[in-house]
Length: 578
Figure 1 (cartoon, helix red, strand yellow):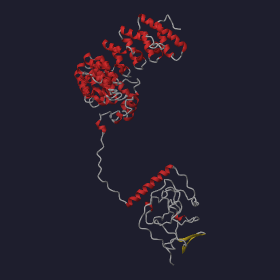
Figure 2: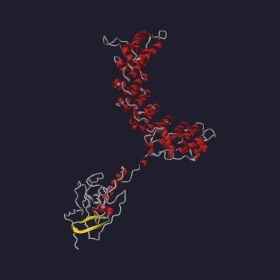
Figure 3: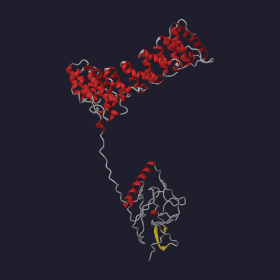
Figure 4: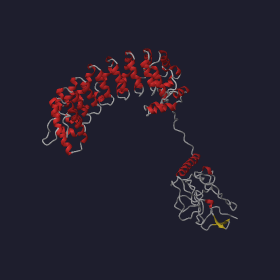
């Protein structure tokens, strides 16, 4: 019997057995290039079966190019291709029921010897069943987002694996070489990896927080039995001596209680005991302890109670690292103590090392303290770096840390070194610095500690502007200092400006304006306190009626008025205001 192998045979269902008809269909359907029949259902993907709506045979389920478990796969869709290479050849969530085929009736068409990869998915969601066909499967269970992601990742891997069988990977156009990983930790100081923190932790944003540093020390390295015993008996149960911790000095120095014990013992220890502590620390462990939250205090005590030879050796070990230590939160304290205790020649050596980095240190939150200590303790003839401040006076005076260094220069250095700085400041930047949040401190310092001629220059620039400057947040502080430290005649002229009549016929007087202002009222209180003689009496008599009037008609300035009223009570208690 001849069987047409090009036209599909008719299939029908008769009770419990499947029969195959040898007669071709009256209207045969042509197979497409994928050996499947075309479909009219939305064009999503081809169906591997005859398009009979009542056909319930599950042997040829529709292939799902997206690997969804909603529709079972047809295992014979691509003959000759291993199923484990097909991108959607398996169902990840349920096992397919066994399907049996009848191949005895006729031979099947020869399989294709080529493999055609499936087209890329057109949708990123599971295609639904056709609304024209009733689903032959139970409704799928709800799919979670994690399962969808897992399926998509798996399908992508399978697609890449199948394509790699057809196309070998192209070699790189040029070889890529990567150098060895840089070890930045080795470029740092030997930072506390013996007992406290690792080098990378030293530059943590939390570094400098005392509680954080204590926690890092406790977590980084376990304590020895000796230190545990000391901490357990540190409540007065036993008296310890320095010789008992020989070999553990470095560890004790890095501990909160151990460091305090060593500090207390060094003040009364013998020279041999101090030498024993010194030998364990210098030179191999000094840099670590200088930067430690507790160890830095032990080094300061060695500078304080050690011999001059020991101090010199300690300072020699620090040389070459002074800039870094000066910018360290704990190291800057040790550098300051060293400057106080070492000999003048070694002080000069310190200055020479710091001098090339002077502007960076002046503007550093820790380094500025070291420069202030240098200005205080080192002979002025060794401070050549002060000349580098010329031309940068406004920059330094308006800097939160530079203004401190500038004040130390004015306080400790002779006029020959500070005169260029003062001339630049007083003749070019006085008014601007009065109104600056940091520069006003420099102006106040000159009024307090400066020479009379420098004070006169500042007060001269305040005349005619006192009311305006008194109402400024920062300049009002300068006005108070000017009233406090001015010469008697200059002070009298400033107070006359406060008691002047209004500038306009219907305007408010300066006293009324100052009484209402949140900053100027403090300047008025200072004027009441420093005025003398008849001028004081006149000022009080001018302020008192204004105070009573404002009390009667307004409560908006009660806080300011209460302060002025209190000042009046101190000046003339026999005449209380009503």
